[in-house]
Length: 443
Image 1 (cartoon, rainbow, N blue to C red):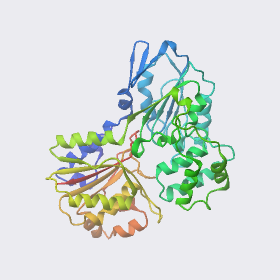
Image 2: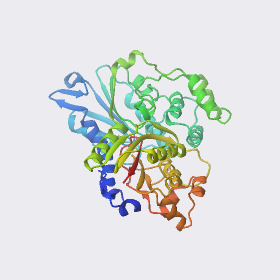
Image 3: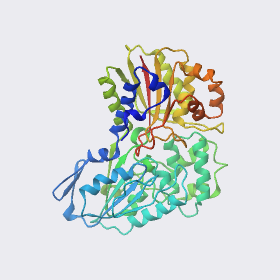
Image 4: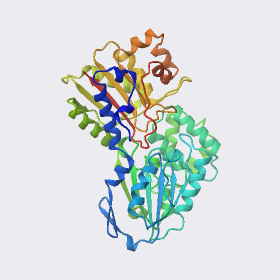
């Protein structure tokens, strides 16, 4: 569990209200702890398993299979193992990292992230094997969380792994939103876009989902392995055209996008046997942070959980709101979402750190303000930092060390900038992911 002492950036440790800030950040993380999220929606009474508002009679179910997919799946699995000690005879976990505790009876196959790799293909093969051959008396329970799109991959015939890796890298670098990237992924993969549900049919399928996408759209979370796909071939090609990738996409990718069979659509009868349940989200984390802030005597305003766009532009918008707010102090503005970064340099960082770096000049000289950015999975981009902390003093502190935020921003090197100031948030992998959170404080 992430605790307040995990948030030890220099600016927070020196701030007179730093402990309050740390408690607010920790409250957000604790609200979306994966095991607790599952327990809120699943209970057992005798021989009946209740999942949200539906009852499953265990004495009428043949085989129960569990598929865990995503960064949070090991922790999401444990409550089900406790509830079904004599029924779970087979399961597969596809996490990003090897868990400390692996339940008995489960196969483990970590995948690659954020770029699919050979392990992702192995995970896809094992998932196909798990789902095949189930009948109408069987139950497949899926535990889905962030990162699933890359961790498990079963490319359609003709799609080469090397092409898929090159294509995914191009999409991540061009600034495409995750919902746009996943439109393409759903058409390139046998399991995505409802493919897993179709493979398991006629078995009953339940998915407990920890949402890592803005708006909690089922087809976007882990590319919607058990959800209908509302997008079309034209939508997929439109994403390529928007980001000028039509001429750069590998031939195997482009041909598959043009010719692959349609994914299952809303209204398809197979989804009558599928129950999809959102058990945790960005909004839930933000609500818990709001509650903790109020208990700290801080005025709170929610700015919503749908913030998207280029990290630098979102930073400017947030800083404008912070400067213009007329709330009595102390106050806290809380925003959630997921920004993007268009790579221009060769530095290190992530979208949260880039957003923070873009705020350094925006907040320069403002008295008694603090901006905190936080990737809820604890890993912002390909770094070991979850985000960073900025105050009105950050610019001058950097200049005193010979650091120009503009030069670091031009090189997408936010990690190095905040590392030099000891203002990175390094909380470690959290085992969960519900997008990003941004906190604007006034004291």
